Image (cartoon, rainbow, N blue to C red):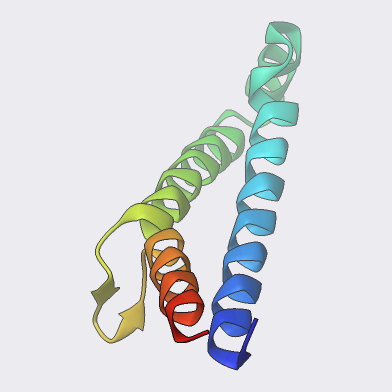
Length: 94
């Protein structure tokens, strides 16, 4: 796989794992049962409303990082594209 491609693959794997975890938390808290949302809202509406917004926005931001511009502010973004291009470059060298 090569070091550079391996690093990109590892970063992509880590990002996808965190995205899956965040989405799972969102689903468990806010997407599975309306009665649960009612309990959360009656217990601490401001806290759980903020948590819902933050988990939702963090999920969207994570997706945009995977598919967005190739780099922003010096940070590598768009990992799916970069992984694909690195794999093609590695294959053409063989």
